[in-house]
Length: 116
Image 1 (spheres, rainbow, N blue to C red):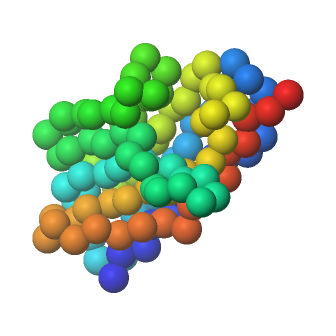
Image 2 (cartoon, one colour; image 1 turned 180 degrees about the horizontal axis):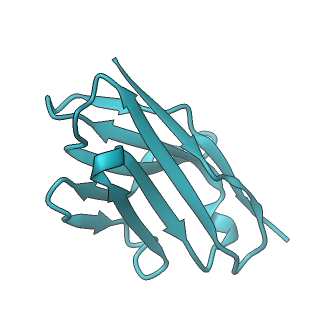
């Protein structure tokens, strides 16, 4: 089993920044891929950003130019730097880690609230 733990969420004013962290532990040697998703009540979970083991990244249109995904492979830790936050970024953010066997694991989520 692989455990995934997110941290770094909180309350921030519009225009502010947050950095989310995602740590994978347990039966994982390397992160084949890591993705950040978000979900609001009554909505589908949506992809925000994803990074593959080769460093290839992809972003939702809403995240481009404002969010940056990164990871430290040796530590099985990943990050989502979020700048210029908007109220519509308010959601629960989830990390999904895909291990070397191409199996994905979800964290419990961290709440991000953007409000004045």
